[in-house]
Amino acid sequence: MADKTSKPTIAVIGLGSMGFGMATSLLRAGFNVAGYDVSADTVARFAKEGGRAVGSPGEAAQGSDIVVSVVVNAAQTEGVLFGEKGAAETMAPGSVFISAATMDPEIARRLGARLESTGRLYLDAPISGGAVKAAAGQLTILASGSPAAFTKARPALDAMAGTLYELGESAGTGAAFKMINQLLAGVHIAAASEAIAFAARQGLDLRKVYEVITASAGNSWMFENRIPHVLDGDYTPRSAVDIFVKDLGIIQDMARGAKYPVPVAAAALQMFLAASGSGLGRQDDSSVARIYAQLAGVKLPEAPQSTAAK
Picture 1 (cartoon, rainbow, N blue to C red):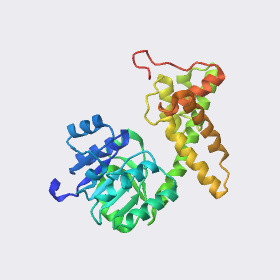
Picture 2: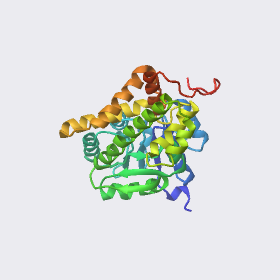
Picture 3: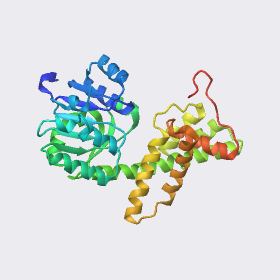
Picture 4: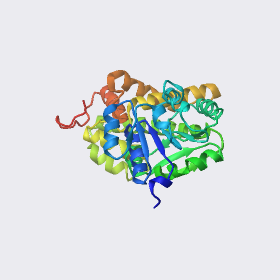
């Protein structure tokens, strides 16, 4: 393997559950990685892993060939790029900005055009797979951008992704693919939550329900992945309720603009809104099952007091 001096320098901005795993995957692959997050404790933890701690997006981007932004939404991405001490001020001409946030495709196109007008490259690259796959360097990345952006970003993409889809030459296409995924993911979580609470209303053994459904045609990836959280009464956020409030809301806006009906996604959004409005917005998205349980007057399993989510 080539040493670090022969590899591009990379910055990761946003060291949450996904960004931290992506950054440490890059470190394992031998890259020199600068990391920034609004949480000083998180930055310090990254430094202990061997990364270079910095104090702003602009400082992270300075001297970096590749800047990976792993923030929550379009507004945060715009702030990372063009806000005070933003990355766009310090990125070298010809360097590439990889945007991993889920956002409206039109906003991705606008951000890409704005950055590329300054002589930098932009890759629209939303991610899927969760924190475990991020930490393992096995994410699915849904990317679109110019051939030059792909070429510049390739070393980082290879280290972070188990599966990379190259979906077009314009920013926004990757975002559009991600929104189709999020439509299905949100609907499947809501459906799984509805089903498990309905099973509780029927007085069924919920662990046996899980065993039967995961071996039957009604199974989904979300049922298989999220319902164990419900069975354990553990709503520690792996992916929070408010993520789907945001994403399903974007889908509603996109559909309204296209004059396209999305009634199932709209119903799912209402359940996520109910969960968020009940104070569960920052808890695991499987918390939608708790709303169904409240409506049905049934109890779901609870975690032992010492490990229960606060």
